[in-house]
Picture 1 (tube, rainbow over the protein chains, first blue to last red):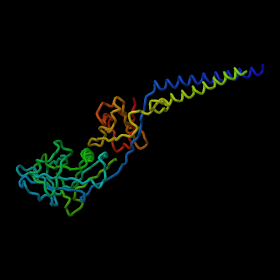
Picture 2 (cartoon, each protein chain N blue to C red; picture 1 turned 120 degrees about the vertical axis):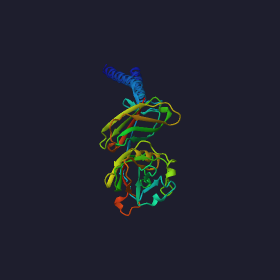
Picture 3 (cartoon, chains in turn blue, purple; picture 1 turned 45 degrees about the horizontal axis):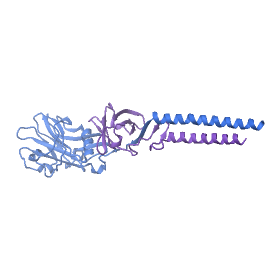
Picture 4 (cartoon, chains in turn cyan, purple; picture 1 turned 60 degrees about the vertical axis):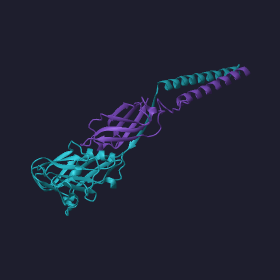
Length: 217
Length: 128
């Protein structure tokens, strides 16, 4: 009698366990039918600074009056002129290869600084250049073969001498992704004066173009 | 007595078998999905994808590009969250992966005025 009671208790326990397991099966099935599949991951960014100086700068200016001249490549100042039939355009770029940025990187901020050494009542506009050029070979006639954006990235007034800054973040970001920064064409979009800015070859280092660059990669 | 013992053995076997089935169901065995609560790994990709972003001239994020998304992920929802250095969300956008041949590029826009300088990480997810 006592043994039968013990067996009955064991049987009851087994039935309870089986019932709980069955509920588990039902729950598992409901998870499989109702759940969403998820693949999640994180990409952490590395921040850095890679400021540009005259050692990585290349610049020149081209002259409408001397359409085949390349003398601007070695000039210590870059002339910008809006004078009809005697316009001068300046070109500035930086070699970012020393920054070791992959094309998946990007600019968080970039600011170009130039120093006006001869002032005049002009507004100077910067237009992004996205095709290759060299200061030793670029001429006025060669400018038509370049790819230059039609919308100015930024402007500055050349009415006083001294440092002028222009934010160029979007251009530099795009250039990092393209692999090369081809810089900007600087030309007067208003005014009548002939102005000048310091070139990378300028004897005074503070007169030379520079650019601050904060990046992510 | 012997009969009762047999009944007990059968019941115990059934219980263990049921537990095994439940476990298999939660793991998603047979479908290549790994269980984790109510979420399982998407079968369309197991690798981290390449993410880049574009900025405007003010340095604000204009779009995020996720490249190399396998074709098998088509119709899944790709969500991207921009995070700062403390993993706080600065903005989140999701889009449905389209169909494409080879690796797809998904472009997400509409993050608002989020400065790229404040973005330290991208948190991404693909869900069915």
